[in-house]
Image 1 (cartoon, helix red, strand yellow):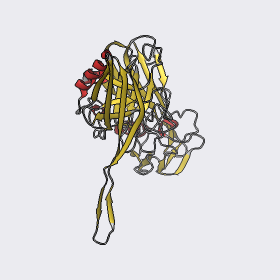
Image 2 (cartoon, one colour; image 1 turned 45 degrees about the vertical axis):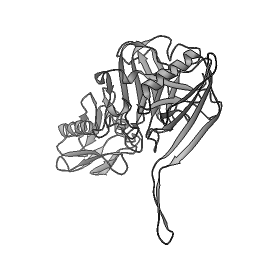
Image 3 (spheres, helix red, strand yellow; image 1 turned 180 degrees about the vertical axis):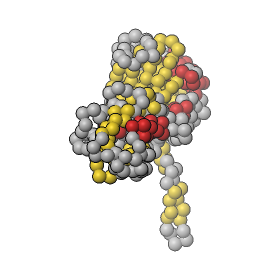
Image 4 (cartoon, one colour; image 1 turned 180 degrees about the horizontal axis):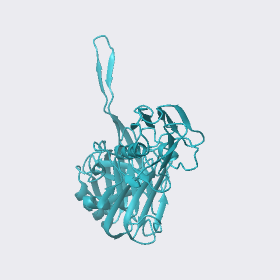
Length: 381
């Protein structure tokens, strides 16, 4: 496959109503993932909790002689605030005290507090009670009860049960490649222990999707490519696609992405990217020097610029490159994978780049029906 130019992003071609997300922070909306927006704009999860019959019960005490049962209403809660309100309501419905359920701003763990105003003025959380099923949902260790206090902080971070981003392409499609990126400065904000899955199905039902592929974590980019001999990621075209992220213990308290691509790539069959493959780094930090020679620095982004040289392009391939440049020009960012077969990099993810042209491409006819092209592209920030 060689160097790949990601030339058609299905996700930018569908209506916003056909792009949905499990949760989103109101300051970091999922709309930031699409339509070639700057990489500095991101989507950030807000806490998606699925409560059902398997994880809704908390057994607790306000007096040492009367265990109480709090039952969290079964629902899919799309924010911390909604979920915490449901836990609070369950505790207050079963007990006589007033409760606060919140996320600790430092540890990111869930914290439950009673004001001690009801019952015997105590709070014991009975995690070892066989009827309790919500311990892991909230991040509490179920090997021992919590007692002798009115405030308890969970043992483990729980930011969600999962989060997902879903797309209705409107018609059955079989994309070649999936890419997710993070901010240039921080990379993909997902934990190394997360489970990341790309799924596809003919219907909007995800109990047993027809396509399900684990996506390996890499802070540079999340990438899934079709095999060179396949027609697409799946054996057949599918209408609905979804990215599911299970990262319950993310220490930041959220997962975050900056851009998504699901679509086709173009790789010339005859023409190939040639060596040398040039990489230059530009540091945009600002330095100032005092009269005494002391240097002060304002740290800004360091951006890589790539030189990609193509040779032996047929006229058809050269004209396809013309179409790509006509579409993106120097104003529209796009994705490139210069080394899809890892001939000169450690993995595909590392050299998957979100770029824009930093100048017009140079094209020359070397002999009849054989063209050469020189591209200069710079990372988008």
